[in-house]
Length: 114
Length: 115
Image (tube, rainbow over all chains, first blue to last red):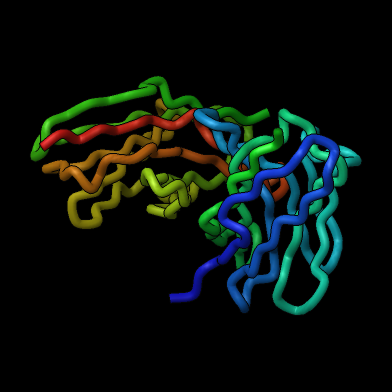
């Protein structure tokens, strides 16, 4: 069964460093998403991406965040200058379409900023 | 704005007991979609079910069943004859048709099933 994959599974970084989280969405899906979950809290939407551009973003997704689809399979989330409060689990998701389709999530990348 | 509330933060049951996880949602939209996801201890989010606002039929899938009541804005999830492997955090989520693609998640309910 096709699934969303994410790398790395864990990342530890120093405050102020740049990190890139990688995702491979399900191959025939057209819409891609990033969510985050701070430890013990609810899952929060960050951004959605379609047709090589951001279609929607939340207040959390400020200028330090960016997303990219560098090739036909990968979807990345970059955090330019990490802060302690960026420590969280980051989930990538994909869906075939938007309005009726389910978003399928990857296993997540646990980011720890020291 | 939309909101999802899962009032039960933690539930503990003994194996083979039935358990119901509550979900109450708020939206002014008439077209929306409700979801349940399971997050086992390993951390991934596993899709369980999707329901649209025009389909109030309850659904059963093995030991899982869902009760959608528009009148009370609830979408409750029942596990029958719970098993230890059901131990996880369960999230209810809402997607509103006129509010983009984002899922709005509830705070989750941690279910612990003891042997």
